[in-house]
Image 1 (cartoon, rainbow, N blue to C red):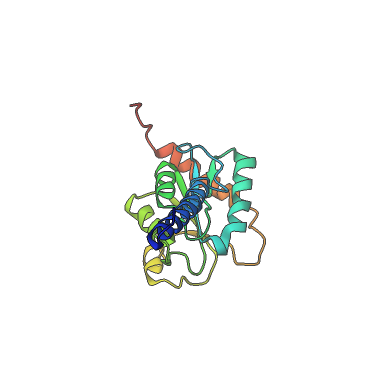
Image 2 (cartoon, rainbow, N blue to C red; image 1 turned 120 degrees about the vertical axis):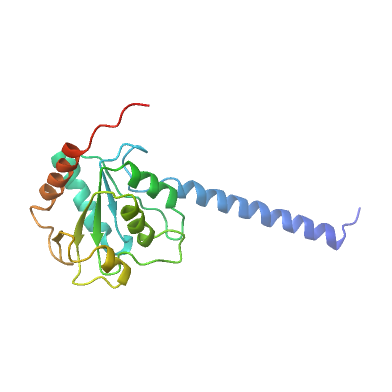
Length: 189
């Protein structure tokens, strides 16, 4: 039995489809498995909001200190570049009692991705989510970030290339404690 050009195209198309299906499913499996998120879905004390390429090392250092010294559940969501993390970030920010913003120079900049610190900052603002700002630059590049995190917002300074300020974890914890003390308990559903 001979094959026609159409049959060959159908087989080629099927092979390509199966290849793409494996590639996409593999990517999706990686996307839903955050690399550095160590807390259960809604068990979050502190959410770290940061530009991955600019403050990941500092965020991990703060997370380690808050977990070891104060036993807080701290979340950093990190997925491969270009993957949509919007749902995971929104759930974690909503569940967190405090957001720690690592305010690097380009914090709040939109990206080609569907979700970035621009959307995180807007969500934090819209939800009136308590936050602790670690300012890691002299000035934010993005005007919108400067508007939201303006001069009236208190912050801890941590210049790039310097060791973590020794009192930073304790100051974050103090802010966390004030939130816990002033937030009424949520009644069970």
